[in-house]
Amino acid sequence: MKRSILAFVLILQSLIFAQEISFSKDSLYFALDNIFYGDSVVIYNNGQSDLRIDSVKGEHIYLYGLDIIFQDSTASYYITFGAPAISFTLAPQDSAKLIFGEPDLCPICDDNAGVIFFTDTLTFYSNSILNPQYGLPVSGYGYDDVKSENDIAANFNLYQNYPNPFNPSTNIGYSLSEPGYVNLSIYNLLGKHISTLVNEYKSRGFHNELFNAENLATGIYIYKLNFNGKSIFRKMILLR
Image 1 (cartoon, rainbow, N blue to C red):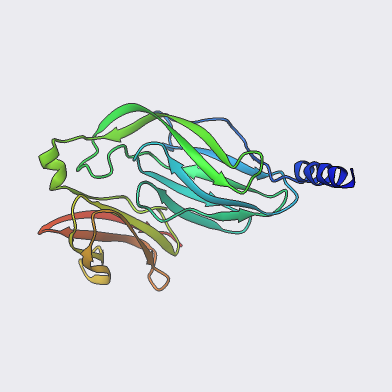
Image 2: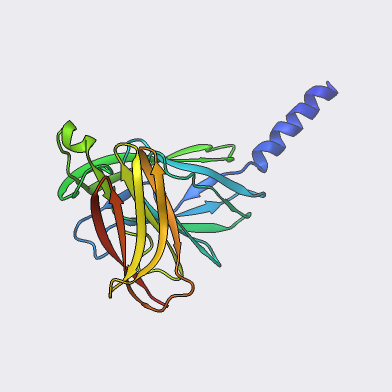
């Protein structure tokens, strides 16, 4: 009898003090007529102990930029197949705002010029007892430029750095449809070489590099990806 009472008390305590994750909205929508082409959601820790988010994953192999804004800091990530895991912790009764950038529906495609309606589900994995796998529906308009299999096989892509503008660091992501030698370098507007982030053989898939511009002045910089004899350039803005 005592064991039964003790078991009941333990179950009751686990329910009362259970970690519970909650969201400010039940879906995300990406509309083309927005000034900011993206959407955001706030995560709340309603429990009495730390809430740990282990990862955020999409149902499809799309690419999302993600900024997580805490009370005293901001972290930037990419969500896609092969990207570094997303993990963070919220103290009891704390919250964080997650800002999702425009979705790329074909990360290994070339121009991503086509615009199509899409749906997806972002699943948040956490230590919440009540909602350890919370699915957030996503819909709206994303970029897609699907080529033939032969075109995709010879393709690679360089993404816009995230965040942009940035201070003092930013993430630069790129995708390779096959393994090969990669050079990723930074230049100023006069063409002067500033830094080499990558100069080595890389595997197929998505890669992310962190660029720290702590010693550079405010301005526009160029980052260049060279892969198999072909190059892609993009601009980024350092704003102090």
